Length: 151
Image 1 (cartoon, rainbow, N blue to C red):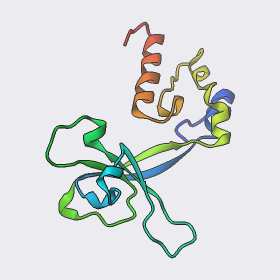
Image 2: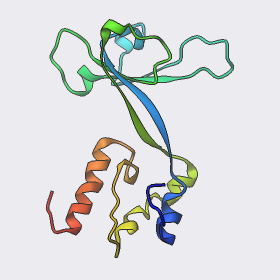
Image 3: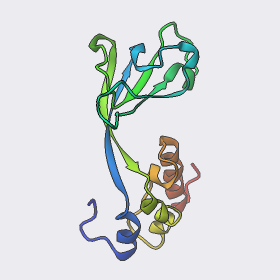
């Protein structure tokens, strides 16, 4: 826990939220995409063949499409790849922590802005919305507005 002694509201609203670490790769290895280019989308979910009952699914974002990149090379971001990406095609690798959306955590989501009422500790983050970076920025701007800032 980030807070040594959370108050009742903080405990009630934040305790249902769990987080998952995700390994992210910026790369140009097309094997992380569907085999047919006409099936490529902005978000691509793949499940490699597996002997297990539950195959691990991974997601690859097609950055050229998402960011309107006008480049010859196709760029991708893959989270938790279940294939070995070609090392010479990896540009950057990092780990992110993302909130997990569960029925239990979603029951508190609409009340999360209440954390910032009459408090010296203010909260913002992707979990105030759909978990995207834009949601984190939007909730950060709401915190700024509490200080009279128009972001």
